[in-house]
Image (cartoon, rainbow, N blue to C red; front, top):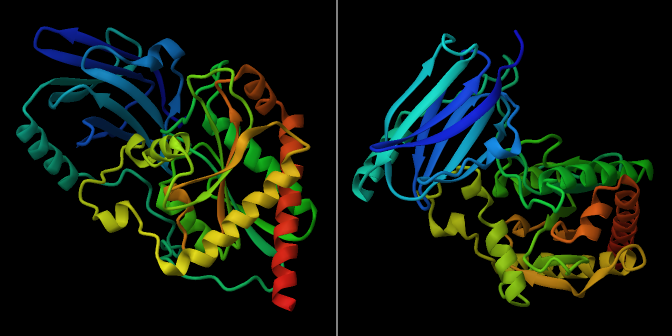
Length: 383
């Protein structure tokens, strides 16, 4: 059977409710989860193809303030709706073809009190079930385990394409999504590095799928990565600002812009419809401890080496090495940097980042920075 697809979506206001309708090509299972802080309506479906145009995808109408959708995990697609105020789900049902040639998923929501919303949220989390297919027999999910250094002597580099799936990231002047730019860049960088024969390269995602922030560096640690590079391309109000920058971890942000960017990126799990309300501060805000000091120093050193190699390749921001508390950079034992490849809000930067030839130049510059970093580490270990 062909993969189901969503071909239409609309939000309608009624005197006593808001009605949300998705047109779907075939009958599907679904489940609804209510999440607080901020108020979100989450709809999980089997892995599905999205065929919504931009006007449909806007999805804003009164109670519904924002809409995101995409692959949440293998086998599961997710819709996340940001809601203006506490709400309750009055009804949720699937209509078979009749008046229309397709199925319709109908969800009616109405205003509620904060207390009633929280009770409904707890219930929705308690009864949620996995829509993902079970792993094949004989291939159980593998728990975390440290992986020793590769026997072939190749260095292990982890490339993290920012955002993905239900989290699109920034949107460029032409409508391109950050998640697509970062994945294209990551794949080209992987090719450039592997062609040297010196590196084993892993990607935290290889397709358009959502990956939690902590899982991104957990993937790197499980594979024994010796470097972690997270790729991003921001959008800001100042459309004239352009240029690449590199961030490394610090307890104190280098400036207000760095702090604002870190706060925005650290909300990725909220954007993806993750419930963080039960996590302790130690989990949500991983504390930097003394064991990270050497790693942080190596990260800052690597950032400087990257910028030296990238300076001849692409324009850099005036303060191109910046510091902030990015959650994705907090692996305690893997030197990690976040590369802002440019600004999708700037027409020139965006055009370049959509160009495979420009991305190849960036990939070669990053590869040279990686070579320089490991050459330095080798010289230190020999001395």
